[in-house]
Amino acid sequence: MTSIFKKSIELNMKIEKFLDIISQSLLLLEKAIHAYLSDDCETFENTFDRICTLETEADHLEFEIKTALYVFMLLPDTRADVLSLVKSLDNIIDATEEIAKEFHIQKPIFPSSLNENILALIANTLKSADFLLLAARAFLSELHMAASHISKVKFYEHETDLLEEKINYALFNDQIVSTLAEKRQLKEFTSMIAGISDEAELIGDKLSIFIIKREI
Image (cartoon, rainbow, N blue to C red; front, side, top):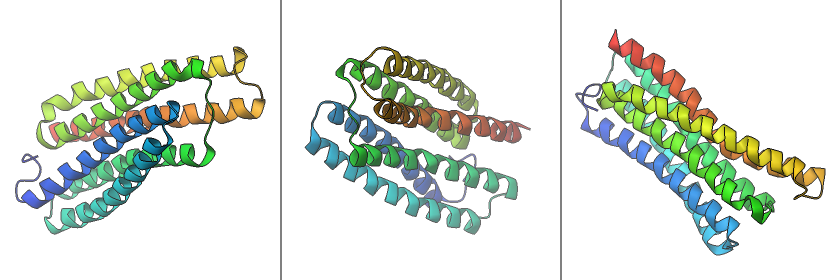
């Protein structure tokens, strides 16, 4: 990150840790959903608790990063862009906690015939977020790599959309769920999972503008 933060190793470390925490939360969400679909309640609950802990840690780090950015007096435009990026990235870990929490509270029952597609959905939506994190790191230290990562964010967001549509079609047309209420509930869970890649794409679009500003 030396290209932006030349004067503060501490600030560098805080942002690196912040990005690492988001990455860990994504991995844990995948683990939690795998456990849930496998009826491994203990692993799911333990993993849910770990996600909540990481989300709290991320919130504290976000505040520390905002404070440090002002202390070390980056150029106003650059500081504003980094602040906006950090705030937006926090939405990703908020989403991971929210999804895990809703599984914990509502305990939806997915037909086993959908398990493979649900796992593919979570894998693709998380790949989109993973490439966003790579793009964010590149924006801060290796600008020339950022655009390539953003293109992959968009690719996996599109793949996620296709899987979401496939799952929703099955829910409403394949006679695998009995009631309309259940269909709507499962559709909402599918939408929440896919929402991570939607958010990643939105942040990627914002990041593309920041990249152009840095290149001028």
